[in-house]
Length: 207
Image (cartoon, rainbow, N blue to C red; front, side, top):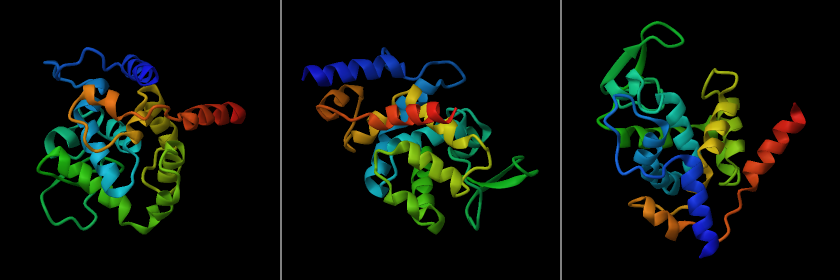
C-alpha cells in the first residue's frame, strides 16, 4: 500500500493534476484539464481495441491543442482525422492543403472511438498491435513510420507528452476509473516504467 500511495502522489505531482476538481473557467483548456477530462475514455478504448491509453491521450493532446483547436471546438475532432470516404457531416479547414475535409462528430467520445477504429482496422497500422502494450515509445515511432502524420518529429513529441505527464501510468488501469481517487485502487503494486527509462537512455545514446 505504501508503494501504491507513493506512485499516486508522484503521479499527481508530476502530471500537475493535484487540486483539480473541475475544468477552469478560462477560455482555453490546459493540458492537465484535458487529460483529466478524457483519461477515462482513453482507458476504455484501450481495453476495447488494445491501443495504449497513453498514446491515445498524447495524440489527442497534440492533434487538438489540448482541446482548443478549431477542429476540436467546432467539429469534436480531436485527432485530425480527414474525411477519407466519410459520408456524414464534415468541416473544411486549411491544413497541408487549403480547405481539406475533416470528419465531424456528435461529441468527443465518438471522436475517440473513431480514432481507435481508424488504427485498429487499417492494415498499415497492424504491426503496432504486435508490440508490447506498455511500449508507448514503439507505438509512437510506429505511428510515424506508418504515415499517421507528416511532422518529422511526431514520434518524439508524443513521447515527450507521455513522459512529462506520466501518461504511461494510465496504460495499467482498468476501464472502471470514475475519478482520480480510484487510481489508488487500480494502480498495480509495482508498475514497471522501464520503457520510460529505456526510451530516455536510447535517445541519449543516439545524440
